[in-house]
Image (cartoon, rainbow, N blue to C red; front, side, top):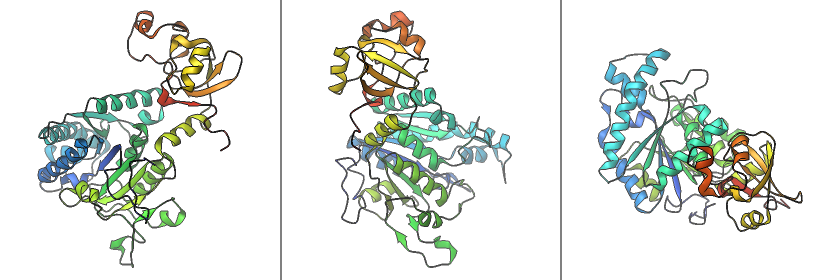
Length: 386
C-alpha cells in the first residue's frame, strides 16, 4: 500500500489524494450519448478533475472507450455492426476521440498522448516493455496518456472485448497504485439493482471470492461491452498486482472530484503494494532464460539499489530476448538477483563491460543504457524467509 494512501477505519480509501499514479477507465455509455453523440460538457468537467489530480503531481492515465460509438455516429451506422463495420467505425472514431480528449485537456495546458494497444501488447514481453516505456516517458513529460484498445485491427478471437480488464492490465503495466472504473452504477451490490431483488451496496472488497463473483450481473448498455462481471475480473487483476481499485458512478458531472471527496464507491483493497507485487512476480513466477555474471562493483551497486549497467557484466549464458527474466550471478557462482533484461543476448554480448556512453556506437542505435533497470530487478535476498 502506498504510504501516502489514507484509508478509513472501514478499509475504504478517503479519496484519491494518497495515490501516486491513477488509471481512470471511462466507458462508452458515459462519454457518448446514443442520440446526441459526444457529451462535451461531461468530458470538459472530467478534464477539470484530471487537472485537479495533475496539479497534485499525481500521474494520470486514461483508458477511454468511445471510438466505435463515435465512429458509427459519424458514419451513420445503425443496429448491430459486423466486425469489419466496427473496425471501420473505430478508425473514424479514434480520430474524433483523440481530438476530443486533446481539446478538453488542453484547456488546462495538459498535453494528451494517444496510445492504441492490443492484447499482445500486455502479454508479449518485448511489446509489453515498449508500451511500458512509452507510458512512463509520457508521464515524465507531464502528458496524460489516453489509451484504447486498437479496435481497427483486433479480431473477435483475440480482443479483450471490454476496457475494464484492459484498464487493469494497463494499471499493472504502468505501475499505478490506483485504478478507477467509472460506471453507470456507484459500486458493487449484493444483487443487480435492476433485478428486482433486495440489493445492498458493498463498500469494500478485500478478496475476489465466489460469493463476490456471484453478485455481478450482465452489461446493461447497448454501447457497453462490459458489465459488473468484467469489473470483478479487473479487480482480480488489480489486487494481484497490488493496485487499489474503485468502482464509482460516472453519470454526474465531476465524478472524480466526488470520489476524491469520499463519495460512494466500492473499493478493492490489495494486501501488497504494486512494487512488492511486481518484485514477487519477477522473482518467483517467471522462468529465467539466461544468466549474467557480474563483477564486485556491479554487485555493490545492486545492493545499493542501483540498476545493472553493461560495464559491470563480464559473462553471459543462454539465448534470451529483451524482456526475458535472467539470473544475475556473482563471478563465484552466488545468485545475486533476478530481473528483466533490456537487450537480446546477441546485443548484450556485444556490450559486455562497455561504458553506457558507448552503447549507441557499438549497436548502431541509441536508447536504454541499463542492462537491467532497477525497477525490473529484485535481489535474491529480497524474499528470503517469506
